[in-house]
Length: 295
Length: 327
Image (tube, rainbow over all chains, first blue to last red):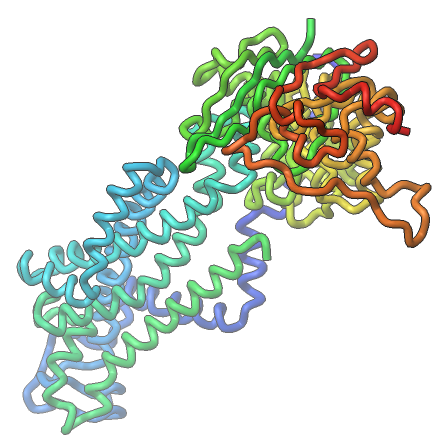
C-alpha cells in the first residue's frame, strides 16, 4: 500500500453526478414525438389499470332497444355495439385484455430470448449453431400463420393464445440478442476486461449485458404493437378472448357485421389498436435514441 | 531476476486453413524498471507476443509454445482463477484505441473501481477513491468530475490517460502497451509518452512497448527489439541501435523515417517488397527476398543470433557487410 492509497482515503462526492438513467430521461424529454407517444401509452395503461372506475357504464350490460347507436348519442358518447352495450366502457375495459395480450408474451419472450441469444452469442461454436438453426426453423413460418397454427393446436383460450404469441416472439428476440452479443464480444473493451482480470461471468454480466440489454429491450418494445395486433387477430378468429369479454380484436370481429349500419362505431376498436401500436412504436423509437449514450 | 522472461515463444494460429506462424522463437527479457520497445511493421508478431504474455490470444484458435515467466510466475501454467488474478494485478495492458477499449456504457470511475474491487476486494467506495487518486496521477483535469464521465465525453488524449489509470489501478509490476499513442494527435502523443515514461520510473514498472514508430521507441525505451516475420532480428540499447544498426531491416527502418535532415523534394527511402506470408515461410532468412545485402546462402540458412557488441544481438548472416555502409 504505497504511493497510491496513502494520499487521500476519503470518499469523494460521487453521487453529485448525473446517473445513466437520468441522462436517458433528459434526452428522452427533448424528443417531442416520443414524449407525446409516451403520454398516449401512459394514458392507455392508466385507463386499463383503473378501467372499472373510469368506465361510465357496465361494459357487459346490453339493451336490445338501443343497439348500434351512432357516435355522439346522449349518454353513449361513442355509441353502442350490436348488443346495445356502451362502446366507451367496452373500449376502456377492453384495453386491459389487449394490453395484457400485447405486453405479457413480449416480456416472457424477452426474458427467454435474451438468455438464449446472449448465451449463443457468447459461447459460440456448436451451441450457437444449435440454437440459431432451431430458431431458423421457426423463422420459416410467417408470424401470423405460426401464431394461428399454435393457438389452434393448443386450443382456444387466453392462456394458450399468450403462450403461442410468446413462442412466436422468442425467435426474433434470440436473433437480435445473438447478433448484438457477437458484435460486442469482439470489441476491444471485452478484451481489455479480460486483460484486467475479469472472469467470463463478470464479462457477461457487466460488459456484455450492459451493452446488449438496451438494444434488445428497445427491439422488444417495438414488438408490443405487433403482439397486440396478432392478439387481436387471434381474438378475431375466436382463438383468444371469448365473448362477452371486451377485447379490441374480438370487438372488431363482432362489429364486423355492423360495418354498413354504423361504420364509425365499427371502426373504433380498430382505431384503438392502431393508436396504441403506433404509440408503442414511437415510444420505443424515442427510447432507442435516448438510451444510446454514444450519440 | 527479470520481470519478464520469454524463452522460445512460438505462437501459431490454427483457425484458418493453413497454420499461421505469427511468432517464431522469441526470446526476450525485461528487467524491473526497464522499458523495451518491440518495433516492427504490421503483422511482424509484436502484438501477438504482447498478448501471449497475458494469454489473451484465443485459446481455441492458437497454439502457444515456449516458456513465459512474468514476475516469477509461469504464465503457461496458470489456469482459471489464478490466470484472472494474474491479469491486471501482476501485468496489465494499455490498448491502442482507448475509445474502443473502454466500455461505452459505464463511467470511467466505475470501470476502474470494478477492477480494483475484483483484485483487492474492499468496497466500491474504496475503488472510487483509488480511481480518483489515479486520475490525479495521470493528470486529468477536474478528476472528480471526469470519473463520472463516459468515455465518449472525453477527448482522445484524456481517454488514453484514463486507460493508463485503468491499467495501473492495481499497481502491476509489468505494463504492456500496445501502440498506445498511435491513435493520438502528434501533440498529445508526446504528452502521453512523457507521462508513461514518468509513471514507469516512479512505479519501477517493467514495460514492453509495442510500436511501429521508431521515433516513439527512441523516446520511451531503454532497449529496442526489432521484430520481423515473427522473430526478433535485432536487439540492443537504444543508442546502439540508432547509431550502429546492423540488421538490414533495422537499417531500412531508420532510413525510411522522415528525419529533420530530410531535404525537400528528396525521395523518402523505402524497403522494397512486402513482408512474407507467415503461413508459407521460405527457408532461410525471412527478410532475404527484400534485403539488398542478401546472398544465395541467406535463402538457405536460417541465421542464428550473434552478438556484435555487448548486449547488441543480430540475426543476420551478412552482419559483417552491413557494418560499413550503415552510416
